Length: 320
Image (tube, rainbow, N blue to C red; front, side):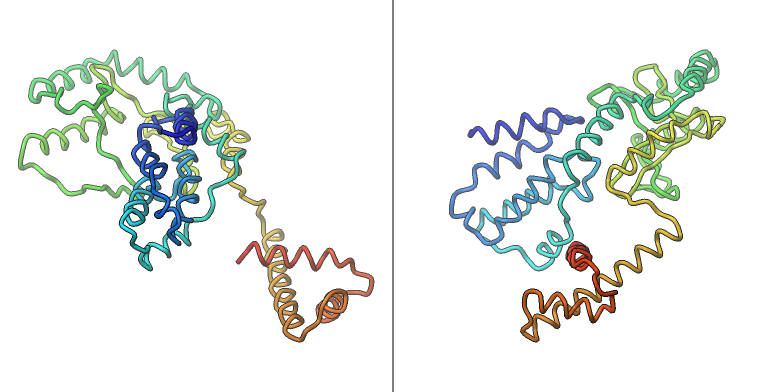
């Protein structure tokens, strides 16, 4: 395999969640594409997919790996991308810049091992709750009873962890509705209730995996999770400056009523300038004549620096 493939794999190894293992199949297919496939008009989309592939998965808006496999398979068959897939690629903006990716990559490594100390305080609350739980005879008896009724080994993942089913926004579930037809369904219902009773996200052996106060980035925003048992002190429990820096890393602008109105006004002015610029081009104006005519139509004061017009045109182009 060529050196560029090895370089991609090495870069993915630096990311959390064993990303090199996730994407090795796709990368092999991309790097092995025959020349005739690389000359396909739609092959240009592969570079955008590759740039997203190298970004932390926390930033992914969709399954980039799955998307890449679909695109590669179509190129291998010599098929054009269908209209819906082209639209999908159009919606997929460029990934955030390198500085953002590095910050998010560091955050992912902390999340992977459950370390939130860079963003949170009051770890003593978690330790106290965990110690109390381990000493709770009712918890121990209920877990022993569950192990007696079910072979819990079959429900463990490769780390030896049994996880409850995920809860989504507004308490929606990927699989919601009481199911009791077989032993697996019965275990899942009982285990979810057990985890709810003891504020867990799962069990690892006989060790309860207690829910933590946590901060996590998602493609849609920043989620702060406060466990039900947590006695919240918003001033002492959070490192708000660090959380704000993490959230703003994606380029979130400052906001406020006045700032918002100013931004809207500036964008309106940019649209007007771009429209006048297009009209001047259509009329055959060029150079200084074109610039001066547009600035006059904008009704700016004489002597206004033409750099103002250039900035507005750049802003309009960036918003398109």
